[in-house]
Amino acid sequence: MFTTKWRTLMTTKTVDVLLVGAGAMSTTLGMILKQLDPALKIGMVERLDHVAHESTDGWNNAGTGHAAYCELNYTPQQPDGSINTTKAFAINTAFEVSLQFWSYLVEQGKLPSPKEFINPTPHCSFVWGEKNVEFLRKRHAALVQHHCFRDMEYTEDHDTLREWMPLIMKDRQPDEKLAATRVRYGSDVNFGQLARNMVTHLEQQDNFELMLGRVVEDLDKQPDGSWNVTLKSTQGGQKEVINSRFVFLGAGGGALPLLQKSGIPEGKGYGGFPVSGMWLVCKRPEIIEQHLAKVYGMAPIGAPPMSVPHLDTRVIDGKKALLFGPFAGFTTKFLKQGSFMDLPCSIRMSNLKPMLSVAKNNMDLTRYLISEVMQSHTSRVDSLRNFFPEAKDGDWELSYAGQRVQIIKPGTDTAGKLEFGTEVITSADGSLAALLGASPGASTAVSAMLSIVERCYADRMQEAGWQDKIRELVPSYGQSLTDDAELLEKVRARTLSVLELDS
Image (cartoon, rainbow, N blue to C red; front, side, top):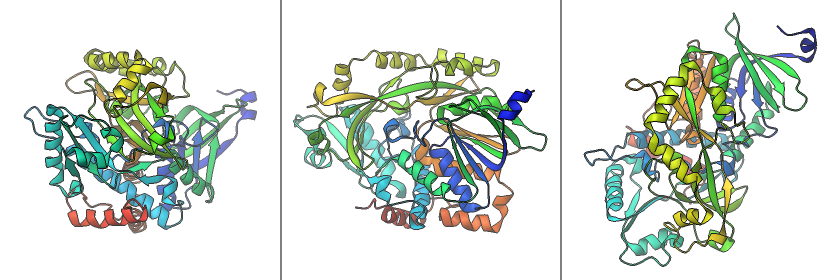
């Protein structure tokens, strides 16, 4: 019960939709809902004083438009030697959904020039050693048979490799066993700029309010099915209550504690395992200009997917950069600008057993993280030399990336399971949804947010107007890009042209 003093400090607003977090997920959901029903009253709450400055920020993620072209961990080798392509197809077609939505927004003038947030950057996989070359050869053979990956090139020829990645091939021994694949129309995405551009558009619409510098203190379900969300200002400490018919928790690593505050039974048992990241950033422009690709290698044993090593061309705020990493680490923070108490405070009786089980059964990951934390600058540059043999310690500096909170969930055969993807959790009545997890994350935001619309606005999704509008936003909606080669070819030709990725 609040005192009279607190009542004088509180104001109450009512909205149809409250988006918690101003990153890629919340901004995408806000844009989708505003296209479907411009009359919806939407509020967006962000704890920082800027939009998209946590995991979505350009320097806090790889910027890879994750399409499974270059990420070898999406195509694991089975015990019988075959390649499991299931996840690669799912991620590839989910990214195609994002490209369609972004193309629509560009065509309608709701996003600026594509070059402000997405740039053509070939996606390459690069391996060395007979065993890894054999794996990449098998992977290419398995993928290229399907229309989603038919443009993927493969080579073991050093001259061709020098054309694709001259920096990486400098002074290589002619008898070194190497192989690579390439998809020319891969992309580098500045998800931070994309999110900020979407918020800029939303702020120009009626019935939208951006509330910066507010922390969500509590969520209370009301008898009518709505939620009272208590906010506290990070500046003066003033409190206010927002009443919303629907709440989305899209606060990155901060979504788990908020899900726990909501108390919905669907969130019981979930825990989080935070992993930090660091990049080596090149300081010399003449080196940066010699590389134009995202080149992914093989992950070390025990490494989480976010730690697959890659030498990346980035375009951030119109300036080209070259990054290598990421190097993983461990911290108890759930957000880059979070608290060291985030992990301890997330422990509940319902998730204690799953979290202890994961800790016990993932010793390889624990050892890997310890080894990563203990590395010196020279040892990190030594890892880079597998990709760029001429790398010099003084040409690179360490930069800290964003936090990722991997999902720990109750398992069937074991007490807990560590997940490395993303997962949408919704309440039974559809009044609250949350997105947990990390990679492929923002690349598949449109597909993930459409699934939330389907679950939480099921009745309205039956309306002809909503169905027609969604197919305008995403022409392939309701159809399988994995099964329909002609449809994929049609939508891909459009998105590559509109987003200027076919140059």
